[in-house]
Length: 106
Image (tube, rainbow, N blue to C red; front, side, top):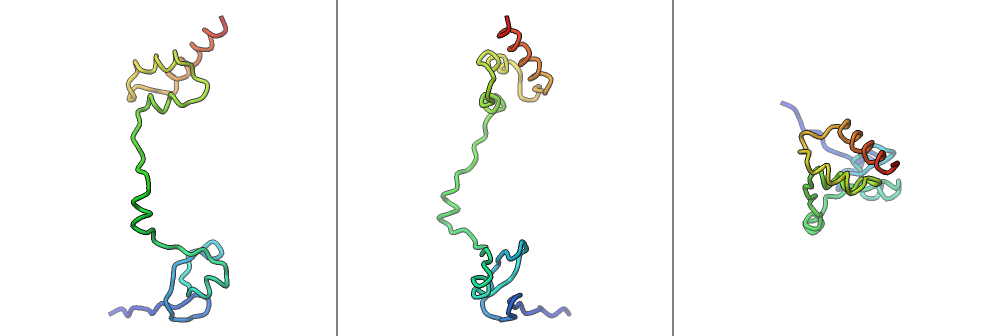
């Protein structure tokens, strides 16, 4: 049978209440005193209130994401409506952009 190893502070070898922290770019188990002395970043679980306040990401369509691309004209956005998200390719976007540039050049 495997015995469970007692966890101790990685800095002072204390068996006091340990916390998870980041010390020198690595995860470490430290007592609060060593974490404070060494300037470690303490990792804490979020509270229920913090979890509840997180805004859930909304799903937006490909057309909505494309509409936010700077520099695309309204005509280009309108022409994108005719293409389903599964059919959109980089070459389609290039063709639409070239078409826009030709119109603006004439």
